[in-house]
Amino acid sequence: MNMQDSALLPAPATSGAPPRRSMWNRFYFGLFGGDFLGLIGMALLAVLVFVAAFGPLLVTHDPLLTTPDTLLPPSAEHWLGTDHFGRDVFSRTVTSLRIDFIVAGAGVSGAILIGSIIGLVCGYIGGWFDDLVMRLVDIIQSFPLLLVAMVLVLVMGPSVESIVVVTVLINIPIYARVIRGETLRKKNLEYIDAARCSGASEMSIVFRHLMPNTLSPIVVHGSLNLAAAVGNVAVLSFLGIGIRPPTPDLGVMVAEGTNYLVQGAWWMSICPGLVLATTIFSLNLMGDWLEGRLDPRRSAA
Amino acid sequence: MNDLPSLSVRKLTKLFSDPDRPDAISVGVRGVSFDVERGEVVGLIGESGCGKTTLGRCIVGLQSADSGDIVVGDTIFSALRGKALRRFRKNVQIVFQRPETSLNPRMSVYTFVRQALRNFATVRKGEERVRIEALAALVGLRPDTLDRFPHQLSGGERQRVAMMRALACEPELIVLDEPTSALDVSVQAQVLRTLKDLQGEVGASFLFISHDVAVVRYICSRVLVMYLGVIVEEGPSETVLAHPVHPYTQALLAAAPRITPKPDPGLSLTGELVLGDVRPHECPVRPRCPLAHDRCHKAPPMADLSSGHRAACWLAHDSAPSTNMTTARERT
Image 1: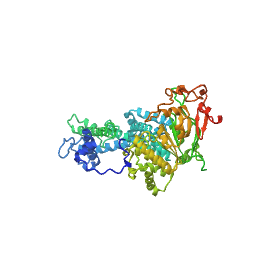
Image 2: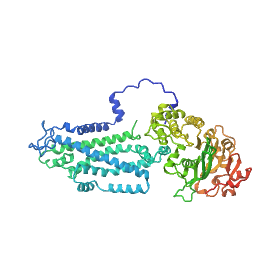
Image 3: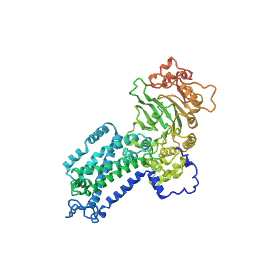
Image 4: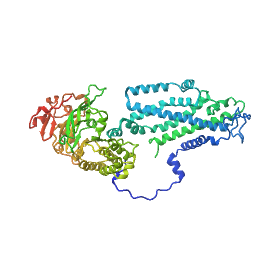
């Protein structure tokens, strides 16, 4: 702290107005630190989230309605053409994006919630409890995604819910581990002891004093994890153990489209494929940007 | 009730042994006893690693002792558990050494200090703001500091906030664990002045842990000198710091930097502390003491020299007015 003990001194006289910087400069250099890729990622993501959020208002056709106009190429009527059942590819892509965001978001949020609590409690209590629970977490982590997905789909049936549960389950270890590490690092700091001396209960120490100080790595992990989750949902759906047709999903659409690629109906799989790639790409860029932004060692400011 | 000391530490032992070095003597606190009278400011000095901080943490109940008692007023604090312990913490507070980690980075100063008022129900909810502003004035902080977060404060301000938190519940005793040693010298002086003024106003007893002799001289009326978990000398600070008796105290004072160096540098210890050389049941200073002799293989008793001035050294024992063997300290 190279600041002086300023609270002892009278308030400094207000100096002249700081030199004006344009809105754009303040936005670009202030928020993004001149990180061009971060800006691109956030811009792309903003568009995708907007489309997903207002999907029902943007679609031009009913995404589930089959018509006799099958395999039409992109036109003014059907912006991205139609598929083998005559359904509008644009409307289906928009609806898929919404579903995939919801599934991945719900899965990652659930994993963050459960994983953080596991990590926090294990790190704070320690001892045999910590050993036991963390070995269970190891076991979860040692199962490959596809195996967990197949078993759960077998048990719960193929549904959006089971994909959310799969996403939660396979991502719990990430957060449990990260938060446990943060908890171990922070639980012996003086402000925790100070809280104890101030008469705080154990519950209050864990959830009011410790938890808010362990959550910052989640932001970075969460955004990178969301990218992976969107991809995983698509992969599972592509393989037929995820979201089932006719519910539109990017993975399902790519899978269906591949059968018609040889017939020249490229729009059926290329369009949802591109949207999927852009989503994952922009989430990854955002994760990198957040990492640089939140890690003081990497931020220039 | 009122003539009971604020704090009475009785044969407190808390040892840490290094599993990699079984030959080395374990460090920590070994059988320490002393009292802090009501409203007294007692200094605890000694080099790094001598057990000062462990002693302080045991006193405020952040660490449980291996044996011995901490008595605060008429309550055996170290015997309390659960809710009784939590409620009793009101009476014993601590200010930590490092300003970077002593405040919760996610809490404003106001919220951080308020938790003590809330948990101990010291004041009614409507009066919290007034009370905390009064506390801020007491430690020399402007009221607008209350709504700031730790990263917006300087080191000196943070230590003042830590003092506010400790004072908030009107404790009997505050342990100050090197509260100024991490600060710039100029800020240190300001904070120490505040502490000194404060002590007179709130009337709590202070146990001031430090390795800085000058700081202790300035603020404390009585001083305890600690070496390797044992108190080797204690007494009024003028006496101990002007006429130290124990060779370790003499060496410690001689090592303190001065603006005009004395022509005679005085006694100094030989070498550094090697834990493997120290044997239990003998004088802990012996391996480094230039005055060590045969008798030092047996732990020396605490010799009474003059009013309140005592030293654990055979040489002091020889010159003591009344040879009193019954005050011998237990050593493990």
